[in-house]
Image 1 (tube, rainbow, N blue to C red):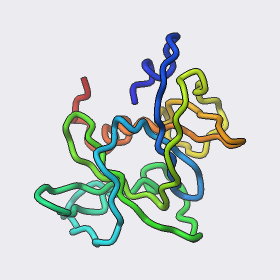
Image 2: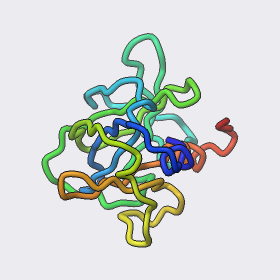
Image 3: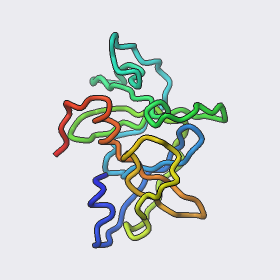
Image 4: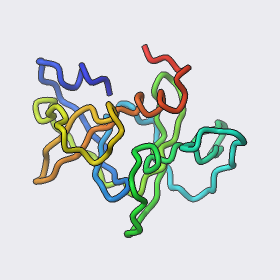
Length: 159
């Protein structure tokens, strides 16, 4: 989700998908999601690809590159109970899958409940956290997936 839209003065309703990666809770705008799939097929490796790309899968009639979100955020791969999933995005009509540890649910809230990120974040990757949603006595860091995609392939232009 665009940082300016999320942190704009005008309050609006928003739905955030909460998921876990590396033992931490993250969220993304539900409008950026095409579908959520079980991570049950091992991706086919792509020679000479970026280290954060696990490979590609073809769940139906289209190919999806898979990004390892734990690696992209420079997190430790904690070995707790995982129900690994692929969050397939539709950003700029591109199908890109993000490999996550668990999908926890959807929160319906308003942009008024999303604050600017502070200094104390779960990742050291600069600019990837676009906001913090405080809900149900926990903090969910909202990810800027465009930033992650751009780090892997700077030739992709988001407009």
